[in-house]
Image (cartoon, rainbow, N blue to C red; front, side):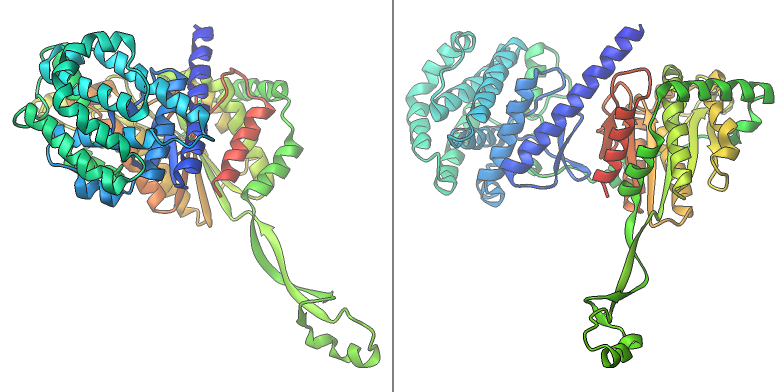
Length: 565
């Protein structure tokens, strides 16, 4: 089981690193400095980008080359497509919009510069994979799906010059033969205008409208997919609405929780506790000895951590004046020196600049049940970083979040006695834990931090409320830069709440909470173990797949703080 967990973490870390590489590619080729990939999907800032052409919607299950091809295609779209011109010519309706978007995507992919041979190969691999997979998933089982798939394959082949994969050609050949007399010449004309979007777009509109007319009225998205073919068709049309033109951003995260609103059935049983009050003194001593042993075995270089953290967190600040300089501002107090010693040049002064760490760091630990396996790792990281930050004069807090019961606890019983009203909101007793508060030094809080080893603190997790709580405490510390480091291994989870509320209730609230915290000036980083939390946290790092802390892991965490200055 431990081996499987480490393998999962290694896979998540590899995917995260690929996201970093893909983001670099899109920023460089697409000339957009704000693009990042988070958990496979592209974002500009806090907003997810809509993928217009279906083959650009690569997912976590796709092979790395497909993911690179999708990123390369997006980069070319951003480099060679004028979004305003695209919106101007894009026809109404799902079908026409889909075909028009695909034509534009195939156009930009057909003009890959010769100095990007890797991108051209990746894109070809991605499109061929999508054509074969869409057929295997049942898209060609309906007449509408078969027609749209045939049009896509024909357009791609004519515009890029690549042959249709044999498996796909066999399926689409009867439909291709039927479409060729009317649409073959149109595609040929489009091919001659591949390098000129302003001339290509009107003909692409005419082509897309012609395809839509063959299918009659817009089909829309079926409410219930009754077959594999209908499911595949609905997926094809996903993201082809009129607001999706030109690679726009979708929903402001601030609005995500406003549809149904985050609700709490009762706060009567919520608690905030210091861990020193939850752990017997004898246990505190035992836990601290265990943690000290783990820290010794980790052999972390505290001197290096001091230097690196000082460089990562300190910012320039004015600190009086420096006198006796060869250049700068004339120092009025040394004017007499010019008379008595005309050759003296050290009569200037300049503002002295020092580096100060006007920073607070809040560690927020997910204390849900699955995190128990990571306690030896997280406790060493948190304990060591807190100690070094304390030596640098940085204010720190170590907080945790869990629930006071399983499957709802007393809150759920109150709800049952109230007649089980629908959509009650959060249905568990929130437990917020303080392992170290800002007023205490690391030395005074050593036993409190070791309280992480108390296994019965780990139950379920309400991540959104915890992020708000930690961010509010961080802002109250008054530092110029407030950092919240969240250690977690997954999405928020509470079985009672999930069973009685809409899907994604807790996840949506976490996303909203992170956005709110960032908007109010907090810097929220996710340090994830086993999963990529990029969907929730714009600043995220997947920690290495190992069960013990080491210097390289600490270096990565410090580098993440430096990179986001």
